[in-house]
Length: 417
Image (cartoon, rainbow, N blue to C red; front, side):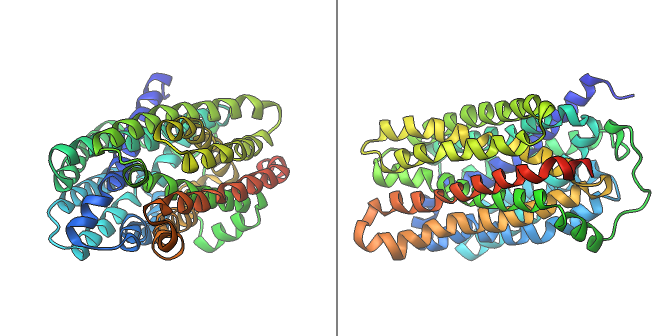
């Protein structure tokens, strides 16, 4: 019998693992300008480095690793993956060229492919469906705490040392954390929280794909999450550069301000979104999808204020509600994916979700802003071009809102199936 206290310990530890992955991932957002200057590359190249260089192999490795996680020990996969991506992040600080740095980021992506999907599958066995959106929203704190620390520490390290020191410091703690996961996390039988038994063998990938493709709610959730990820990664990754170019802030000011907004606004938004979804969803399951639709739609006016505000103070005040609302969809979204997938499909379902969301979101979001800076708005607006590039990419959140609203219509029937 697993106690609630131990389940909370596992949730906290896996949240820290997720946090470390986002420190290692988002630290580059604070390092765009120093790296670009040292290696003499363009905004498009930096968009490639912060997006596609990481995400192509992250997504390519994600599905086979998740297939393995649906068959063998998930905690072992998490521990090994954490050790790999942490070591490669630290090694990135010794890169001698832009190409070498890009290859090291590829290896970081391969490592991080083994973290998220197995963790969510394991959490689903520690927490029953009526508490799962809240648990997964707490797990999602890793995104915001990790990104916040990346901004806070990255800004200070760049101001006082250099970008190489920032990557070295970001990578080393994960090696010790990997040992803690291996020693203290218990692997549970699939279906433990629901008192159901999973099939003893895994489900073939083709059957998983056919099963999920027939779930309209799952397809629409994947589409909505992909588009919102594109908006979110595009705006967040270029946020530090936006404040440096448009508002002439120092790296310390940027790191401190964005760090606290991402950390506090993201955690509050993620938790409140999951908490509300579990309570409203108990009355009507459609609220698991309706809430994300409403939250993402409400964030759009604040996005416009953030990017177009004439001064930095106004931009910050618009960013706080924009980011908080944008974080509220994460817990309900993860809970829907776990609920729509069968027991031996859960890690694979998350990996499929991440394949599309990261290819579209992390792959295209930062790159699209870089391309718009260089070729569309840059020739006319110069340093101010980033305002309009971030706004255009951020508006994909409107389409994401519509996808979630449509998913609500299919959700009760498909969860029952």
